[in-house]
Image (cartoon, helix red, strand yellow):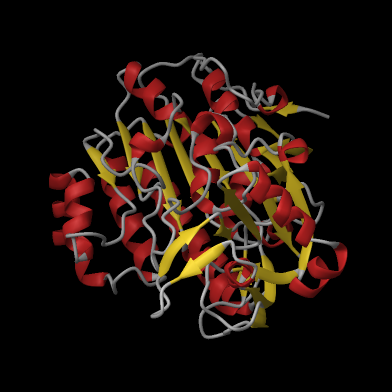
Length: 433
C-alpha cells in the first residue's frame, strides 16, 4: 500500500536537493542500513529501490556520468575510469567535465539559477561552479595533490576548505578524506546551496582493501551514517530539513578476488603487442584496457579482431579465467560505446590488469593492493546496487524491487519539473508524490 507524506511539492526557492553517492554500496547493504539510526530515518520515511542495475563497465566514473545524465556510456562518452593511453603505467582518468557529451542535471540546475555544489563528484574537474571540489589526482606537470586540486576545483572555495579542514587530511586515505568532504559539504549547506552532489569513497576503499563483507566495510557504513547524521542535524538546526530531498545511491556492487589476468601478456605472446628490448610498448594491433572485472579490447582492424576471437576458444578462456566474450552483437545490449568491438568478462574471483610484461597470464592476486573489485556484468542478479529517495516530494513506505542506474536523472528531473532530451532512463513515478 502506498503511503504519502503531505508536503507541497512545488519547486519554490526553499526546495533543496542533496545527492549522496556512497561508492560501492551494494543491494545486500540495505538490511544493515536499516539498523543504523540516520539511514533508517530516511529509509522509513522514503522510497527504496532494492536492486539497481548499474552500467557496463560497472566502474566509478562511467557510473557517475550515467547518474547525472540518465544515459549509458555510448551516449555520454565516459567508457572507463581511465583514458585509453597504451603503454602508460598510470593512465589519466576521465577527470574532467568536458568529457561528458550529454546534458547533465548540473546543467539543468544552473539553467534554473540554482546554486550547485559538487564535492569530489567524478568527472567534474574544471566545471564552472562557485563550489566544486574536483576529484583529480596529480598528473603531468602538476606533481602535488594541492596543485591539481586548486587548478581544477573552484580555487577560492578549495583554498578555504584546505585552510579550515586540511589539517585533518592524510593525503587521499580514508576515512580522513570523507570526513573532509563532509566538513566541506556542511559549509556549502550553511550557504543555502540548492543542489549538492557529494561523492563518498570510504566504503569503496575498505572493500578494495579488506573485502566485500569485511568488518571494515561495515565500520565504513557506520561512519557514513554518522556523516549523514551531521547533515541531518544541520538541516534541522537551519529549519530546512522539511524542504530537502535526499537521493542516497550506490554506483556498483563488489566481488572478492583471488587471481589477476594479465591479458596484455597473452596478446604480446600472440604477436598483437610488440615491445622494445627494455620492455617498452612499441606497437599493437590489439590492446586490453582494464575495467577490473571486465576488460575492453581495442583492435585496429577486422582481421585482427577475427584472429583474436579464433584464439579465444573455450579451453583458452577457461585457462585464462575468462567467463564471457562479448562482441558487437552482444555489446549493443550493454550500450558501452566508443567503438569497442570486444569485451571480456572475468570469472568470479578473477580481475584484469593492463600488464604486458609478465611471464604469467594468470597469477595470484597481491592482497597488499586489494582483495576485492568491481567492473563486472551489472545484469547479474547478485551484483546490484541500491537507491534511496527521501524527503520533500518523495512517497513514504515504498519499496520497489528493481530500477536502473540511468533512471535516477529522469526521476530527479521530474521532481524539479524539468526534462533532458534523449535520456535512456525513465522516471520512477511511484517514488514521487
